[in-house]
Length: 114
Image (cartoon, rainbow, N blue to C red; front, side, top):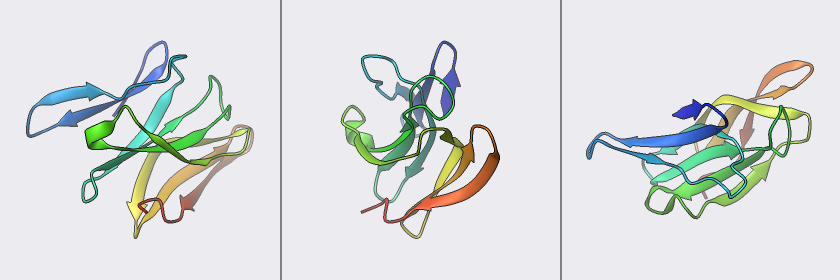
């Protein structure tokens, strides 16, 4: 889930161990949000961006075993952002993308689980 105070951070809760883990951020504390987990592969997907709508929006993946070593798998054009929900459908990462000035649409990032 995402917690937003001074900046947004992604947290992971393990129901088996009852442990909450903060997903490590970059040294400049860029906001992270819109997380989802592929339980089959053990991979988490999340968004990291700059401050403000549509600023440097990138999609990242990380193994649940190595959250501190994420891989950038995609990016969104300046002026567009990803809403707070992503999910996997047949290997594609599906999310709501919106224009910071015009509105919302549903899009996918094909082959995100490869």
